[in-house]
Length: 302
Image (cartoon, rainbow, N blue to C red; front, side):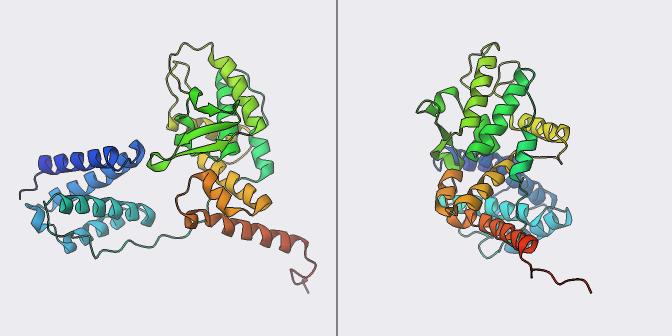
């Protein structure tokens, strides 16, 4: 079967439609798959592949090597391979191929980096400013909410006014895989959101979005990332991204409660193994406490 660019693009389109409408994958996840598969399509075009049957395991390995040569990280390559494996499973399911060339290809191991977090004191420093205008009030509320409830930045920007429950004590959140969870909203976050909603009334908008820009449209993920980074710099901190607030939420909860299962539920992790990275962060915290306080933690200089 001919594998020209337009035919392959149509297959990718059908697969993404399947992921969103049948599998219920989020728009962001589907877009990531699309980017990965478009790269694969361009690679096949560059080596003049003419049929689906001629996409061999060797050709797929060559694509992975090409990604490495272009300094794509091991973690990103893992996702590229996962995207391609899912794509070929779909093609096998609809009868376009008999087997997947990615079947025996293993993903590279990525370095096990621990997430960057802020200390409680640094979170306080980040929020130690008085909002002067509606944008400041919105940004203050976003930071408070992400840290208070452990939200992903996409979950924060996609939150609506109608998602609050129980007198604003809880927020309904749609996470990865379109899974809904209910998260508590702390007192400080509630107060910040109340201030923002009061300022929001002066912005002309018919949108139900909780956080909007000055034009009345839902604020973008990119805008939130930039705003938080700039606030951190103004507050005398290194650049801070929203995910650091989510990591900080989980780590600070674990340090005080030790309840990993509850943190898994609050973060919306489907697997406890994903949440377990925070036990390593907590272990590092204990080691620091030990080294700083135990009289025999360090050898005296002679």
